[in-house]
Amino acid sequence: MLPDTRTARSLWSVRLFSSVVVVAGGLILARSGLPEFRSLPWFWLAACAIAEAAWLRLPDGRTTLSMGSIANFAAALALPQQQAVLCASLASLIVELAIMRKPVHRAVFNCAGTAITMSATVLVLQVFFRPGGASPVSLWSIVPLLAAAVTYYACNRGLVMTILSLDLWTSPRSIWLQDFGVRRDLLPTGAAFSLGVLLAHEVQSHGPAALVLLLFPGAFVLEAHRRRSAMSASVPGSPYDADTRSKRAA
Image (tube, rainbow, N blue to C red):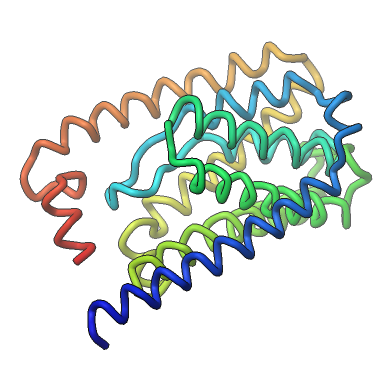
């Protein structure tokens, strides 16, 4: 396939997939309704925003990883579906525009993707728990929590890998092996889900102080990794080196 033909097909594929995701996410947010916004739990919106703001750029130079999954998963456990979707989606949009300074189209896509991911996760939880009433500390809830975590991860990473594979015109498997993987992404994200369960339980038991105890230490650790990645960017051959990223994307 000629390069220009591949580029054209890739561009149209990205636009089509992005449009589908944005429309689907928009419908989910519209279904949540503005009346829910008036009774929105502002603490959870702040928690999701703080976690989302603790971000780290992956070696591909295009994708970012944040602690948002911790607070988002906790919100899915603690809140009804409409409120959980609104908190996580609005936090994603606000942080990506105001702090991460991402282009509007990427922020809107990620906001819609968050709405899809959160909606699917809460639906799985509602199969086993009453809405907004998950009991994350009981032994019998391990399997439902695992099912919800798998749903969140599959939706979130599936959307990211699909858009990247269409953009780079490569297979999702290649994207997974190159930029995610088990040790680099799956295991740390599993740990994040565990912290999300703990956060939901502690907030319900002890109030907002749990946010400081659980999220801030993790944010400091992630900030240290981000600084280390920035230092590694100047090392030739490093995964974070601009020349290395351009060769991998070529």
